[in-house]
Amino acid sequence: MKKIIILILAVLLIGCSHEQIVNTDLYTLVGQYGISDEGIYYKNENKNLVYYYDFETNENIVLCNKSVCNHNDENCVSFSLTTFKNDTRLSSHPIFHNNQLYYLYESYSPGEEAYLCTSQLDGSERKLLTTIQDDRPMVIQNIIFYKNYMMFSAQVMFHNNDKQTTEFSNEYIVSSIDLQNGNLIKNIFSTDQLFYNIIGAYNNHVYFVRYNDNATQDLISFNLEENKLNTVLDNISIEMSKSFVYENHIFYPDFKTKKIMDFNLKDKIKKEIINIDIQGNQQLDYMSIRGKIISLYDYKNNKQTYYDCIEEKKIDIPNQIVDIKQAEYIIKKGEYLDSYKHE
Image (cartoon, rainbow, N blue to C red):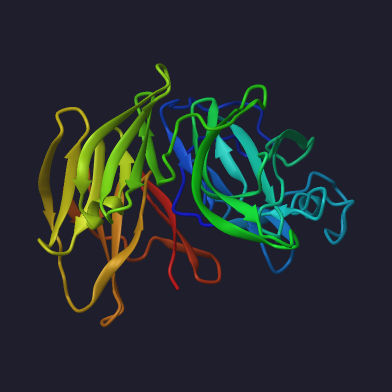
């Protein structure tokens, strides 16, 4: 399953009983660590456990509410969270959205059923929210959690003549799940067999990059209130297709002009906001939804550069990185809080 960047949310600290004020217009693109203001939930592949990293204590805590537990079998809450029925496994880090914990379980075999579960914030009381399936097998490509919905794009598969194996078709679908009752709504709009890549959401609109047959891309929005698909911008650049939505902005780096670009969704105006400090073979490393940060990495000189898209400036966060897993880091400095993976 292809996944991209990610994050947001506000959650409770483990063991606390109060809830934080939640900005309900935030969204989560499924992929990396789920991050709250107070800590991070993530899975450890090597140990088959789900952990919680506490910012205040700088501790990694096994997500298990049992006072006595060896954390090595299905009697452990954390261990049991990594698998579900029919040999499916937790396919991403736990997902945080609107003070809830969600888990997506998928099979190693493409096209099999997937399951969306939810639990308490300490990992207890896991329950099945819905089974993700279609009349034909499909593979989920990307996912967004926004307001009371999980929306995903998927590629349909078909059985070959001997019906012993499945292959990818040229057909794509976009469906959604109501997070309040688990209802699966299939094919919420016609994709005309084109791939729709989800890049974010704002003001009751989910934004996609549509990949056309003639190798062009369009910026598309889906209005959740009117169930209506709209074309925001035709024939966007390859650079703009690698972007993210922050409030009414779409930010992306343009290496041709050596600028960070800002496309305003309200007035449909595109402008240059930051000069890119290019040295060597610099590439896009990650984009932070929560922190409004674009990170570029110079592979030749082994140098990381950060740009704040709202303040419109280059920023310095050299010593505020907490290593909680090999090759994965958390940035924590003031209002900046996000994760990225550096191979």
